Image (cartoon, rainbow, N blue to C red; front, side):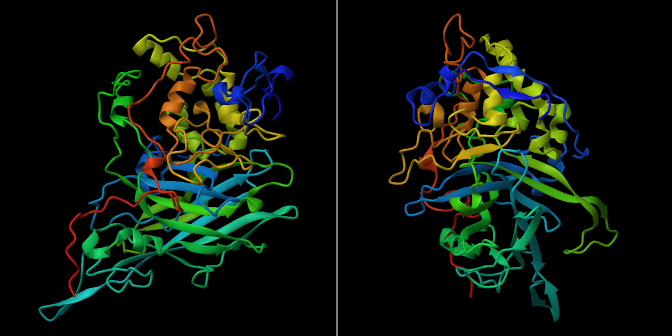
Length: 514
């Protein structure tokens, strides 16, 4: 990137994966940044993560809430990477009668950069089809359409859908480099044949769906990876929201004691579900030719124009047309919520990593430490925040920084880092690299990584080698900051798709009629 010189370390400050120094302080060095310039091309203007931008708040079906990418730790799945993109925040379990379909007009995409140039080299594209069975029952001699999602038991097999009124399916397109161009091919459903994959119904309740997790796991499909002889696994369906945070207290000017016992609700999302797109792909496919570090982010795009119909139908409530416009984007957690200013949140959602130097000042001169200083009197770290540049824009030297990196915000994973948690749950450290666990955030992100606590500590300088020293660059950097909402790998499954079953709409277990 012209004019942008990423972090420069002296030879004495370089560290290697597994070193105690890296595990305790992330990175070290005094000659952090040689020069920084924020000039960059501006993307076409257009309006993620739990309604983090004004524009995306009005289109929740394409609002990305969380993005995960980690070396698979299910036993026997070494050599695979699991990627999770969650959408549609704040799903109440009792959100019937329509529940939470995906948008059939949208493109949901997972992007992979495997050569460090902040451009996608591989893209997985998900397109959804929603169909109405228009189930009817006789009423006084008339055949009347029913208003409900289902009128009887559904499952456990994916094809047991006779009583289901709204059915969802999806396709998986894989875009990759072929010569000098990028080609897109559709994946085949190795499990059932064809190109279509069935999405399970949302968790209505035990009377409708019986043992929901058995039913949902029957929708884990094997898919082909075009132009290779490789296969992966895919699951798309409703899951318990995997993000844990005291959202109310955080956004009420951090209305809790950040270094003491929590005095608010332990998890604002404890009663919420999301819709998860989960894939597991061989490492050999994701890696580039010269690097074992991959970057990833998820996006959602909508047609440029949308006009309401005077006479809407189930399949066509509006007119859609024009080119696709990116409206949602998510890589590293909490960036758009807590780093980017409100005036630029929509622009960030529409941008691509290659153009992220336009947002550089939000990283080098972040506002959150100053706000914490005003609220709690803590001392923010010395500016500019080049430690955060390494975490968000380039990757950390010796951990997950590509050899030839162009700055861009994304989640970066060193695929050579051994996964933690292969043998038993409870072996992962919820603070990831800050806790000495090099397989955790920010080296990718696992569901059990407590990214809120990690991020709170990072913005106050926990990554500085002199964190906590009175006369150091980050005198408050050793504070054990927390939002009081605890999370670790005990809250998740040890097998694909890792996220827990959604909270059911009805807890009762009366069998379905008929």
